[in-house]
Image (cartoon, rainbow, N blue to C red; front, side, top):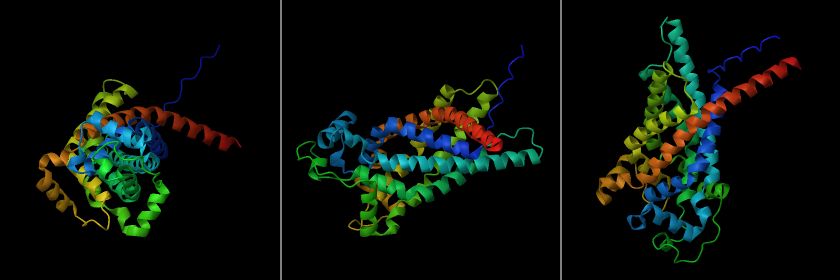
Length: 319
């Protein structure tokens, strides 16, 4: 009996497969952690009077808006994360392939990305992603932090349940009508500064992965913990800018527009340095869990995506 031929190894240089796997992993991880995003974003942009502990914040939102309030804006968030991850992974893997090809051409013994090359790849991918997806996140932040009743944002459950708010498309049209297209790019400067977040995250992930790959196969479980560790450090370092970006997303024409440095100094002046880290608990928890789940899901989805693309290509050739 003829022995079964071994399975061909999965190629690791398919940019589109990486992008699709990143988008799919991002959607799955965001669905699982979205209530933490809601809590963190509201803590970043609401007044000090609205601050509360984690459980109290959950109870206030549920009492005021129902359980669905924890998922306010999830439609735009899922659309945003799918586009964000697709763009990011496509450009990251394209840049990574460029550096690896250059390493082979130069005769370098190890074609794995160096720390500097990982940072450059992250910067290019992150900048492209920010410019393309910032309008999506502006809309998502507006929906997530919309104050149905100003008083009920301070005193949970004491006001009548508000009328149904407009969805993603309604919010977009209202924003364009009242503030113009420029509002879609509010907070883009701190968002570009925040490119340092994925640079730190993916550089740490790649270097730890390269180190471990010499000793063992990287399983989804290992990828989970590597992703969590990288995101924990990256988010802790960049959180003040995350706070400022969220506040700039909800500024309207009725508010005095602020630049990034002005917003930073105002928060420090009014609330002290602790104000820059308001909501960091749920944010770090959400970011670490999302990143860990993303890396775990992405590895599994990448293999399936490549197999589907290869099968589709074979069918096309056979036709």
